[in-house]
Amino acid sequence: MKQAIEQFLQSKNIAIVGMSSKSAKFGNLAYKELSKKDFTLYPIHPIAKKIDGVQCFTNFNDIDKNIDGVLISIPPVEAEKVVKSAYEVRIKNVWLQQGAQSDSAIQFCKDNGINVVHNKCILMFAEPVTSFHKFHRWIWKILGKLPK
Image (tube, rainbow, N blue to C red; front, top):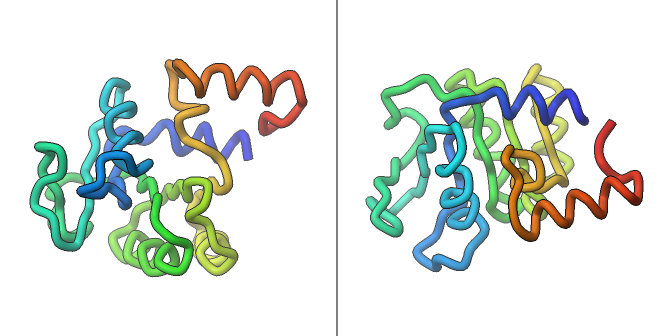
């Protein structure tokens, strides 16, 4: 898993699926935190044109840049559809945020040569790690839970 995480974090152009008009959702928090780091982010939302003042795209095809990875933070039942769409546009890195992973989405990635990270919080690994996530990572290190 450590290698999969490192490979994903080398992505510079990342689509985010899971932002919401409800700003307390994880997708919105991830956007705010990751935008402070060395990533260019492209929120995907099927309806919203803007969320929190940020332009959204309807799907991967609406983005005129090569997307290196996609962070998925939606219910697991929807995740497999997103993973398949990512595969269709040749996205090679998928991060299924904790709570978004499904066995079928993970298996699809593995079967199709997509680097997949699942059941981990991206904010614990995207440097620099700050606040609660830094503390959480420290606890995981002490408990031997960090990926090796």
